[in-house]
Image (tube, rainbow, N blue to C red; front, side, top):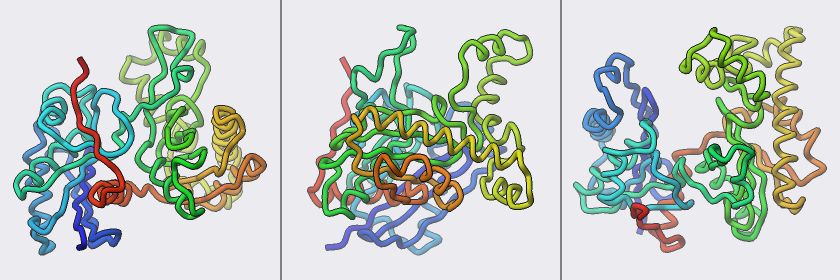
Length: 357
């Protein structure tokens, strides 16, 4: 029998939903939430009813009966560190995300909405590859500042999904292979996958600069800037994440616009794009050492991977390490759905969420 799955991916001012029948996408829609509507709520969790009602209304508008669903999956939110793969949404998870999330974030609403809809029709709700997946090697956690150990914050969902897709295309499984995966969007992360485990990451605030993030910068200069009196805490965060990277120089986060500038002879734009790809290539080399050079493939993914210029600049520096595969796109809705289908088909077992003692 075919399985229909609803995937829900809340963002700060939008909620994206997709309905799939097996691997076939039936439709995808994005619900925009005006800033004035979101501003009515003091806490993210308070948006739950509003967003859920919008999702149900949109499904009805498209003539879709929720009773046809075999499962509902939401974007995993800000839980304490969890394993990769699927978790069945339960009351314990709902309580944590509603009343005590690690961080207030729109992704927390994914599990809450999925659970409510699933409960109403008697099916299960899941999250898949939460943003808080943490499988780092112990040695990867150590820093020179004991109060600041490294943690895994990366584009886990798309990174693992594209690694699985690449492995399947080669007639192997994710657990058989080693990958370095580069996710390139508003932020850039570089991840090392070793035989089915995400063992180390370069988060989007610790490595390459990106369209809107500063990436890795000197700590001494950063401390001086923090205490210069020019910025408050909020302003510094914005400078590093949101107003950094290409935007700080060119006032755009759209790589297509940067490439247009280059084609029109803008030398600074060329230098900056080359600097970004140079730093991405360095990150790939860094993660290759984690895998002791045993890299089966390097995967370039995310929205920026649609740019042939960007991918070619990176390939020039890394193709000697391993074959480079370009799997462009964010792929979040597909990744959530395919993970859920693997659980429904018995190919994966969903974890049960419990609070740590």
